[in-house]
Length: 174
Image (tube, rainbow, N blue to C red; front, side, top):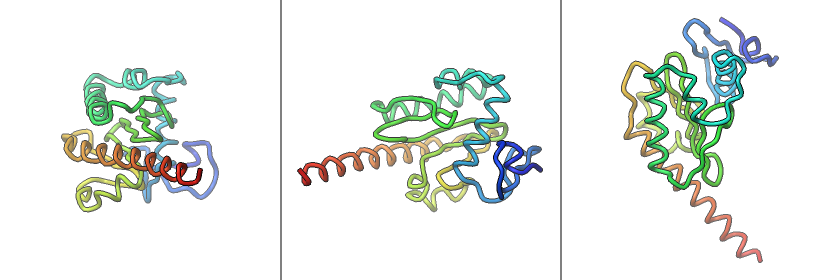
């Protein structure tokens, strides 16, 4: 077991990370996962700077690349007006703010729809490991495509509605 600080270079009272099983022991958060993703990517790309989703996907073996491309295609289909970028060293779709992130790890895929995306589907997500704003799907099992699709649709509506509210509020104040 390693302390999160040993992995990330940060210091402080962080939870432990089980390097053997590639997972945190204790409560997870988006910041912890992003830091681990960053160090995972550094280790696997020899410090190559990843700047596109294509570059990120290319760092994986063919079976993982296939799944990552399928996740990407599903998100693109549901959010065609969203832009792609790398944020927190992982693939990100942006639509009036971060829409969703996704990533591959040794034993699982992670999908990051923000905490609102998790909260909106509480009971439906019970079969999956969740953290604040995070879903994990075992790499050796089929991904729940319908659930991912529902969450992406929800996040698109949420981000577009938030933008409409801001515009309405700005119009009222002028």
